[in-house]
Length: 454
Ligand SMILES: Nc1nc2c(ncn2[C@@H]2O[C@H](COP(=O)(O)OP(=O)(O)OP(=O)(O)O)[C@@H](O)[C@H]2O)c(=O)[nH]1
Ligand SMILES: [Mg+2]
Image (tube, rainbow, N blue to C red; front, side, top):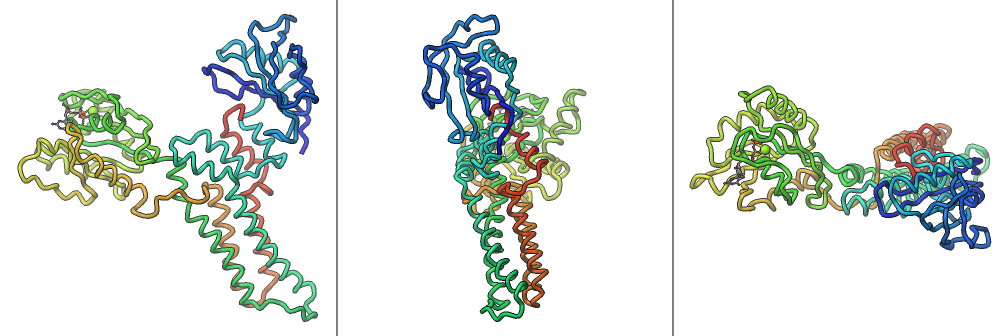
């Protein structure tokens, strides 16, 4: 697909030592040349070579600093179009002046994800691979990065395409039977066709089974540290982060507001939130607002570490936990200050997994992390799925599976017109995953989540 306009944008984030301005489109070379001043011209005779030069500004003078530029002719480029990239020193001014000059000379500022969208529309990658580019950039853990890499390798797209191909072959069999009903052409029996439909369905179900693990790996989990005041919540946050982020004192009510930090625990990306200790008798209105925020955080978190103080009578804190934790929430009872626990202290029953820890002595933390891991994976498979399955993919897979399910009884009762209709619809659903038939608004939605310059 040819695009008539040429787009330009920074493809590096502000604040780095270098900035890269990317230009893509049919006019990329002319536009770059209109600002490029060098003894070695950017030209078709000189592709994929870094060229040293300066950028000519609107007043005809050159930008003081020297820059590098490279011309990558399409279709063997990221977008499949002609691309020029200009590298200059980072900072706010020089990159902006270069980009402004390019825009004044006729380039259009690229929309978020527009370079990748062009790569997709030009057949450089399928939609699952384009989505993987965004995942790769936003990956917060090694596992999320590996999952995105697998998707970028095109594995999901390949599996979907081969399922689609098999449905196409089954359809061909059925359609020729419908077209030549009189001929005795060695047709497959209904049972044989059902068998083939079931095999495709099983492949899709296998992909769908990776959905929850994909979501955990890609999005991470929100983990709240909650409990009564002074039990050691902020101390636990600091220990899990590995640095002193929150203020810790022996005064109950020290933490007055929620405090969130990103961490990776057992390979899982976690948004870890320390909360104000929850109590009914708050010291003032500020603490009251903090307690309300604690309650909101508990509701929004996938897992709650409810912290207790093993050195004091647990009755009141057990009641507080009961009052505050919504039914069905995933909770781990963390019995802290085990170093101060009375002789023979047995962990009271809270109806949820419980661990004894001492943040002070750093004991019990590995057990706590194992419980956390179990809470995340539900004790099941925690390996990185072969293919990353997003909610968008999962929706299409579910619809395709139910269409195949409908096709089975129709085939058994030899209502082949209906079988063909449902098989066609199932193919259409799969084509949405790889983007062959994705609607423009679906594409807009996907690419709008990218950053500018990607
Ligand atoms: N002995 C002992 N003291 C601890 C332990 N963990 C925390 N403390 C102490 O308990 C006190 C309270 O710790 P914090 O981490 O501020 O407690 P908190 O739950 O965040 O308290 P609030 O913010 O007031 O709700 C501090 O004096 C800590 O040093 C522990 O494992 N053993
Ligand atoms: Mg605190």
